[in-house]
Image 1 (cartoon, rainbow, N blue to C red):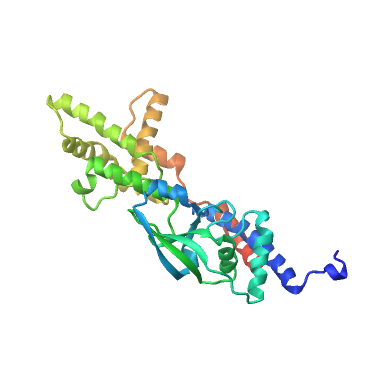
Image 2: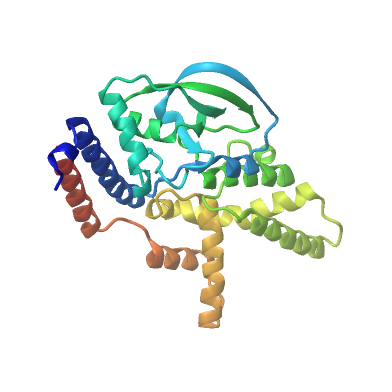
Length: 310
């Protein structure tokens, strides 16, 4: 209870309610993004620069920027989610004070951001962005410093994607697969896998050398691996439409998983296992096709969120 003189005014009451709603909305959003296998974290600015080295920067002045293109922060990436909904209650007082300023039509100073590609990282003004996005504000004034880096960054970028892109470029530089087989995609969805492919190529190179009794060039080894190791398994994956059972995965993901699964089956059964048998067994054991109860949970969550937002 408040004493009469301490009773909060209407702006204060509304700001407290706004923060509570935003905080609860963050909880439901975390569930939805988890179910959809989507990124829900703000990107740490310094961590991003580890994967896309800075080539320089320059200040370009005050600009109106789109709030939904702000994907990271220099220091507050633990306090807000990707939609800038508050994750921590210790942000409440600062958040509510800015919310009250909106009600009172107080003009706030521009935020400060770094621009990388088509995305922005906040140096100062995280709470202002959080309140603005919660109010449905599509643009916000910002002091913008543009950072020049190789590669592309946009509002859908996450750290995993940056790591994968860097690894993929290095892998292509090592193998020239993009030039040898233009139009084909050799990407993984998980980092740390390309070294395994390089090992496969190296082993195949040794077998080719033993068979042909001569040194094998880099290009011969890559072409031999593609033609005699990768492509036969790729044809099996396509024949049985196995990718349909593993949404958001790639042929390279399945290639590696099936080969590892084949080795496991051979060790367990103490016999030779064909590629096709291993592929079908892997699909049966690990298919990610949705189940009915998942669909029921999804509909329940949608109804719950819609009811909360009314």
